Amino acid sequence: MAESRPATKPPAASRPLPTVAIVGRPNVGKSTLMNRILGRREAIVAEQPGITRDRKEMPARWQGREFTVVDTGGWLPQGAGGNASMDAKVSAQSEKSMAGADAVVMVVDSQAGITGDDEGVAQRLRGRAGPVLVAVNKVDDKAHENLVWEFARLGLGDPFPVSALHGRGVGDLLDAVMRALPDEAAEGLEAGAEPESDSAMVSVAIVGRPNAGKSTLFNRLIGDDRSVVHDQPGTTRDAIDTVVETELGPMRFVDTAGMRRRARIDQAAEYYSLLRALAAVDRADIALLVVDATVGVTHQDQRLAERVDAAGCPIVVLLNKWDLLGTEARAAIALDIERRLHFLGDAAVLRVSALSGKGVHRLLPELRGVIAEYRRRIPTQAVNRVLRDAQAAHPAPDGARVLYATQGATDPPTFTLFANRTLPRTYLRFLERRLREAFHLGSVPVKLRVRRRSG
Ligand code: GDP
Ligand code: GDP
Image 1 (tube, rainbow, N blue to C red):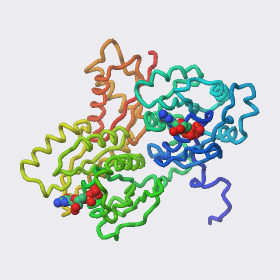
Image 2: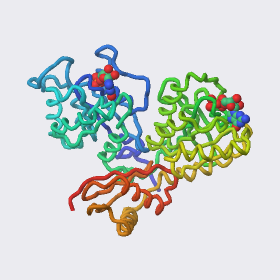
Image 3: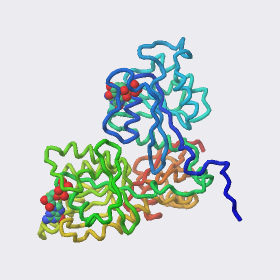
Image 4: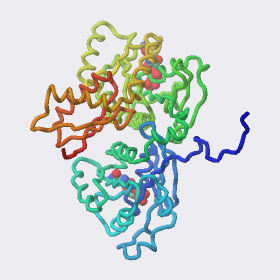
C-alpha cells in the first residue's frame, strides 16, 4: 500500500524553467530586446534613468519552449568609463542572475562600437562556463550589417545582428539561444515528460486587413459562446485571448479583443492592425489569414503574409466573402494568389463565407493537419538518407557537400545542415524541396541552417 510521504524532489511542475540573462552596459537596448522577446509592443523602456534598474524576470516562449528572461538592468552606472574599477561597479544582483542563468545574451550597440565597458563585460563573460551569445543591437537595416563583425573581437563567438526595436534578427538569435539551453528532451524525461497543458494547446491568430471578416469568422467559430472556456489576458494591456473548446481540444485564439463584439475598425487603422497582427502571430502556432475575396489579394495582404511567413508561422489562407463572388471574380482571385502569395508554397487556401458559415467546417481539419506537420520530429537517420539520395542524384557545384544533418527544432521544422563549404541558395532550395516531399511537410515553413565543418 502506498503511503504518502513528502516528496524529496520537487514535482515536475515546480521545477524552474531555463533562464536566459540579458546583460550589457546601459543604453544598448536590453529592455527593448526583452520586450521584443516577450512579444510586447508597449515598451518598458526607461524614460527616466532608474526605471529599468531593477532586475526583471519574465516568462517567455519561443518555438513552443518556455523559459525565463532576466533583464539585469545594466551592469554599470550610466556614464562610467573604462573598466578599471569594473569589479566594484558590477552590481551583486546582475552578477547573481548571470551566475544562475542557463544562457547569457550580451547586448552591444552596433552604432557605438566596442566601448571600454563592453570590454569589461565581455571579459567577465569569457570566464563563464555556460553559453554566451552576443547580440549586436540597432542593426536596423541591411546596410548596418557590416558593423557586426567588429564585435567578434569580444571573443564570445559569432555575433548576431539584431534590431530589438524592429524585431530584425531576433528570431535567429532566439533559435540560437534555444539550441544553447540544456536539452529539453532530457529535461522532459527527467521530469516525467508530462507536457504542460498550456504549451500543448494550439494558439491561433486570425489576421487580415480591416473589414476582411475576421470578427465574423471568429464569431462563427465560437458559435453561440457555449464553446468559450475562458478569456485570458494576452501580453499587451488590451490583448484578450479566448480559449475555445473545439473538436481538436481547447484552442487559444490570440488577441481577440474587439472580435467578440463586432468592433468597427476604421480603415486608417490599417498600419496599427498590421502591428497588432504581427504581435499576435508572435504568440501563435498558426495564422489564419483572412482575405476579403471581393477586393482580391492586395499588396497589404501580401505584406502581412510575408511577415507572418518570415516569423516562421504557418498560414492557412481564407478567401472570405466567397458568397459575393461571380464566376469571373472567382477565376481572377486564383491568379491573384499565384502572383502575390506564391511564396507560401503549398499553404492551404480555403474558400469560405464567414457570414453564412459555408466552407468554415473545413477549417478545423485543415488546422489539425498543419499543426501535426509543424510539430513533427523526424529521425536523424531519415533526414540524412533523404539528403544523401538528393545529393547523389544532383551533387552541388564545386564539391560542396552536406556532410550530415539533424532536425534541430520543431515549430517550424528546422534542419541544421553541416556542410564542407557554402552551399548556393538554389541548391538549398532544392534540398528543402526534397525534405518537404519526403516528409510531407506540405505548407509549413521549413528552415535550413547551414554550419561549416571541415571534412
Ligand atoms: P537598456 O538601457 O540597455 O535597457 O536600453 P534600452 O532598451 O532602454 O534602449 C536604449 C535606447 O536605444 C532607447 O532609446 C531605445 O529606443 C534605443 N534602441 C533600442 N533598440 C534599438 C534598435 O534596435 N535600434 C535603434 N535604432 N534604437 C534602439
Ligand atoms: P474585420 O474588420 O476583419 O473583423 O471584419 P468584420 O468581421 O467586421 O466584417 C466586415 C464586414 O464584412 C461586415 O459587414 C461583415 O458582415 C461582412 N462579412 C464578413 N464575412 C462575410 C462573408 O463571408 N460574406 C459576406 N457577404 N459578408 C461578410
